[in-house]
Image 1 (tube, helix red, strand yellow):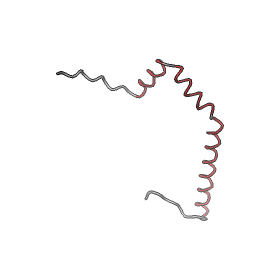
Image 2 (tube, rainbow, N blue to C red):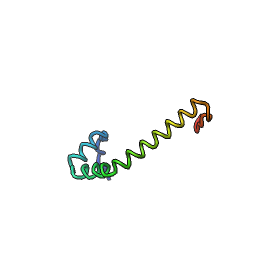
Image 3 (cartoon, one colour):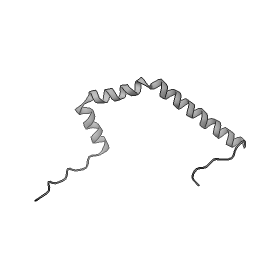
Image 4 (tube, rainbow, N blue to C red):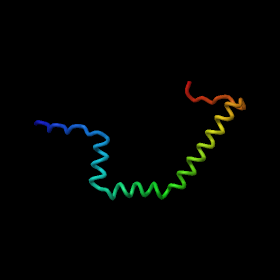
Length: 71
């Protein structure tokens, strides 16, 4: 029994392009889901930025030592 030849591997751009061309409504719904949570994501991003800034300030001022997880 012979096997069918494998299809050539597609690049990420080709897969993305194919998905959006095949079903633009799918892409629109995924983007709309992100847009619906835009404010929540913005506040989470702002909070993590503030925590990171406070950590860097504390380390540079010598208040705490650098907490490294990987050496």
